[in-house]
Length: 457
Ligand SMILES: Cc1ncc(COP(=O)(O)O)c(C=O)c1O
Image (cartoon, rainbow, N blue to C red; front, side):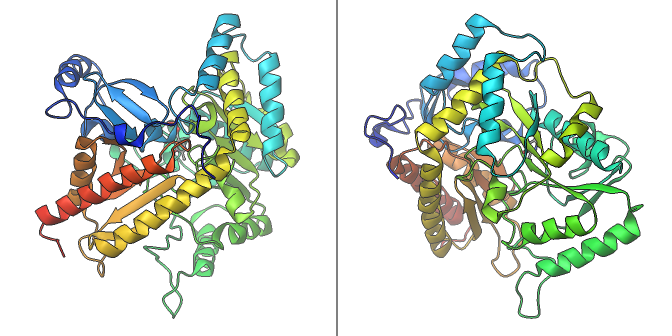
């Protein structure tokens, strides 16, 4: 479905990217970075590998302080799904900021409307909700609800899942020595089926979902005390590099959990609200979770997140002292409500799916033409390109990942690195011609890096 000819985010595709300085990042970026980095420490790899200073954003473009304009394939970090400064969302936030900024967790008209709309767009029975201001706080609340609802305390999550950076959210992910002395007690990780790098396969070499579930069964028996409150998973792994599950994974995991009285918590902070062409990614596998977390694109840039709980367990929210200082403030609710309305009124879920087809076509031909491209994958506008040194051994090609990321950025494409995996999360308000221009830049950059590293075929 094409965007209307007068759509607010439409631009002349020939006008982007527009690099006006001799080098990127330009001199003003350099100067400002020196000042900022004298104080702020701990930037992400996305910034460290390309320290540009952005000044403004409009729709699918970003402009830096030197006047260079980039095509945005990052949406910040999967956040501005509906484009930078969507006029209706900006107006709704400004209006709320002029009217009422905070009144703790009292209901307000805009909050009530948001809760009702969120209940309407979810396809299951997730009618219990709380609102938060970051993904990781929503995840923490979800864990506490799972404990309150089951009376059990242990959690199982998956290798390479990412769920946030606060105490227990950290324990659901890959450990890092600076996270503390180790994983919190009662948190366990298991491998999850990754179609490109399967750990368990059938005799015919196909990924074997049942073998993973057999492993989980034994794992629970041997490694836990049998007090598992929930399986906590990302529907599609974002940080790990847009890793898709096999189609039978979530339906089978749902039955597995039901048979053992374990809740299924889907962390949809990254995948929900249009990113994959649905409100919730779990809809792709027709699998109803018991607890869901929502974030990033929910407020299209305004920090607002949600935890949603099934009807059966919603009263458990009362047991966790769930409210916070900022959760559900009127500006946040206005941003989320306007985002939901825009997505529906502008038919953007369908557009995200159509864009996803375009990207997958382009990425499949990239794989055909470029030996270092080992795997390409996507769901709607959540996409990944995995670079390898050798297609048979699948050895990760970290240097190529870094170089392609930087080379494409130098040509005017803002996007997201993940080691040897290039991650793309363009705003879903992108017109097709601009999507093609971004893909042209990626293709050119891969070709250049291949030549440089001696892989030109
Ligand atoms: C799946 C998932 N859960 C939780 C988080 C944490 O969200 P936040 O950075 O808003 O705390 C992230 C952030 O990247 C995420 O991708």
